[in-house]
Structures are given as structure tokens and as C-alpha cells.
Length: 583
Image (cartoon, rainbow, N blue to C red; front, side):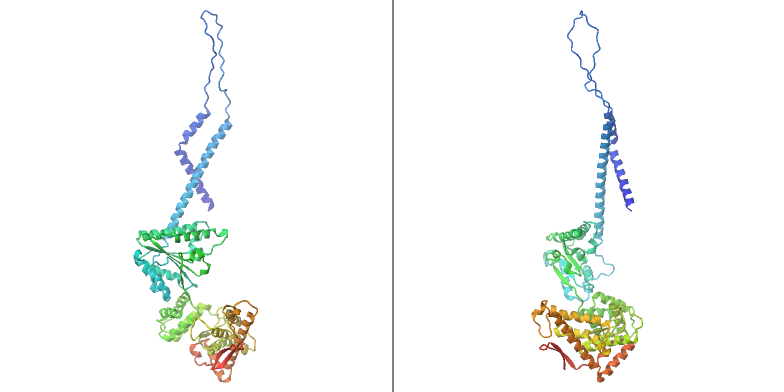
């Protein structure tokens, strides 16, 4: 490829050279050189003075007057002449080559600018089919209320502007719909302002200056479009802004990143505040707000920060209602399904994937119970992957049953709602149990956190009782989960069983002891609860659950409605222990 490119360069060079020869009349130069080589100086004779003589005087015979040339004739130095002529030719060729290179660079620059202008123009939002508006974005009412102000802003004359922030940063975990929200906003303002959509990776190139050139081209294209369409505003949305807006460092290898970021900052700052010019509204989205440069997200640039977290229960219900209302007619089943999805921390992207997967298997002829199970199966597939069909030994099957029932029974005893239990092997998990507290809270207390630790240790406690302390590696993830909660309680939140002194917030030698004490006390409570369900008056209920689980491999909320536990968990702050007291 390089060889052919060089041939093209040579062809251009010789074409340019011949063109110059023709234009500059090089023939005249050749004739002048020929005359110069054959040029000879005229001879000059010096006449000798003689006195006047009389005619009768005897005059000596005339002697020839010697000729003394002014410039003695020299032999031509052909080597010097050749050297000078060649020097003239070489200089001429060099100047021609440099001029040709300048033309090539200018042509390349013009072509590059034309290409970048075309690239920028293609980034304008043009809906295909029915355009989506802000009303099509499910949930997140407070976020939509903020963006609705901008929709009203572009509809009003500039002299009645609300003086809103011209820079917006959408941030939050992956899959929460930041990009989709921007497209819905684009559909809402399409008739009032041009909307350009791009990603941070579009500006990342290995050649220095290309990213900055594209930034300028994008903003110039957006502004020119607004001027042509006679609009007062234009929008520029940059998804994954962290690709070009990351924190700057002193590393010279990041010079292209610095150049692109500086160009972006200059474009954000460079617009006039005059009402006569089209004004920009810049929106950016990222999953990593902490990685962005402080100069980019300060007030005056991307100063308005809007968080899109995982959907709350109300938003999850809206998603499920829209997706499955034609299949599930019972409000109670839909409510329970929404709680499970919300408790499993599904993002909107995962909910949409669940919807697509479930609708492949659903039909209107199935019963509501069958439909619910199909949706749960689709949920399992999204969370943990396809089911492993390989056979398990009888001992392994019994261990998985005891382990998962341990989680479920402990959760039920502590006031949790057990929504689903499965012993189907998926991925690296032998089974799973889904349970949530009766009341959802965003501010869990110390007792709430301890209950979560006890539930996490329920599987290990069940294996310990059933197999005489011979536990399996399946308990490893449960122990890790319990340890993480206990560490956060002691180190991050300053919580202990005995007292909550602020000194525990600092690193000290007693932290590990406090963490270990919380885990040991929780494990003791889990064992005590499970021993209650092994008593003769409760053994029949447990046996029914085991038999049903062997046949169906799954249990639902209705299967645990008859399970009751007569005691309540308390913290003895004087002794620093956990106690189960009669209700």
C-alpha cells in the first residue's frame, strides 16, 4: 500500500515539474546559458603616440603595431560552468519539490476538513420511523422534570429565557438509560433545535490534532445548522464523555487526549452570551463521574449533574406493567414479580433483556402460574446464564437442597419475604434463594444489617447441622458476603454489638475482633433458628418443602406462607451478643 502511495507522489512531482518548465519558458533559460558559455570579450588595441611628421622626411618603413589584449584569452573552465548549471537545476528542482509538497499538504488538509465536516453533519439526530419523546422514558419522574425545563426553554423566545445551565452531566451505573434519555430529549426538541449525538470514542485518534479538529467541526456544524434553520438553540450530546474528559496528567504520551479536552473546553467557553446568536446546550453521559477532569464538570461548563441510578420499586412496576400486562392479569402476581426484579437490582437494560427473553417463551394460552415461572426462568438466565444439564450425585443434590432451604428458613424466621428458591445449577451457582425484608428502606439500621448477615450464613449453618460440620466450598461466597457487610458496619459506619463508639471509625487493632464477633454471633443465631425447624413438630413442614423441591426444583412465595417462627431477634448491648426472644 505504501509503495503505491509513493508512486502517486512521484507522478505528482514530475507532472508539477513539467508544468513549471512549460510555464516559466525554460527554453529561454537554456538559450541564455548557451550564449553565456560562448560569450567573448572584444579585443581592445592601444595605439602608440607618435609626433607629427613632415612629408619630406624620411620615414622608416611602417612596422606592424603589436596588439596587447586587455583581457588575455583564457581557456574556458568547463567544470566550473557545468557545476553552476547543475546547481541552478538542482535548486530549481528542490524548490519545485517543496512547492509540490506544500500543495499536497494543503490538499490533504482540505480533504481532511471536508471529511470531518461531513462526519459532523452526519451526527445530527434524524429519527427513523416514529420519534420517541421524553414521555416514552419510563419512570425517573424527577429527572424528566429537570429536562422538561430545557424543552420549555427552547420553545420560548431568548428574551424570556429561564437562564438555565448550558451544560448537563448525566451519570450513574451502566444500563440505566442515559443514552436513551438523551434520544428521547432529542425527539422532544427536534422541531425547535437541532440535536447532534456522538460518543467520546469518536474523538480518539492516534494522530495528534485529529480529535481537537473533530470537536471544532462538530460544534461548527451544529451552530451553522442552527443558523440555517433559524433556531435559537442547538444541542450537542456526547456519550461516554470519560473517553476524552478524563483527568489530565503530566504524561507526554497523553498529548492527544489533552489537546482534545482543551478543544472541548474552549468550545464550551467560546460561545457568545448574546441573544442574537444560537446558544449551545451541551449534554454528556458517563458511568464514571469520578474519572472526569474537574475543569470539565465545574459550574459554567458541565455544571448541572443529574444522577440516574437503578430504578426504584415504582419505576420497576411501570416497566413490568408495560411489558407483561397482556400476559399477567393478576395485580398481585405482577406486584410480587416487580418486587423480585427490584430486589435483584435489575437495571432498565436488564429489564428490557428480561422482557425480550420471556416473550420468546410466553403465550396467551398458558396459565398465570406457568407464565410467572417462565418469567422467573428468563430472569435466572439473565442473572446467571443457562441451566447446567449435567447430573449431580444424590449427596450433592441433598447438600444443595439443605443449603438453599437454610437461607430460606432463616430469612422467613427473621421477617423476610421468600419469593423464590431454585436448586437448578446455573453458571458457578448450585442454586439460589431470593428474599427481601418486608419493608424496603434506603437507610438500613444496625439490626437490619445483622439480619442480612444471618441470612447469608444460613446455608453454611444448614450444611453444618446436616453433615456434622462438613461444609462445602459452596459456602464461600456466602461467607464473603457476610464479611463485607460486617466490615462496613465496623469500619465505615462505626457499628458494634456492644456500643457504637466513634473511635471504631479509625484503624485500630480491635476492628478485626469486632468484625469476627459480629460474624460468630450471627452464625450462632442462624444455627439456633435451623435447629427449631428440625424439631419434631416442625420436621413435617420442612420435609414437605424438601419433597416439593426435589420434584419441581423451585419454590415460590406461596410455599413458605405456612412457615412461622415464634421468636424475635434482639441485640444485647450490655453483653455485646445477639439474642432470640419470645415474641
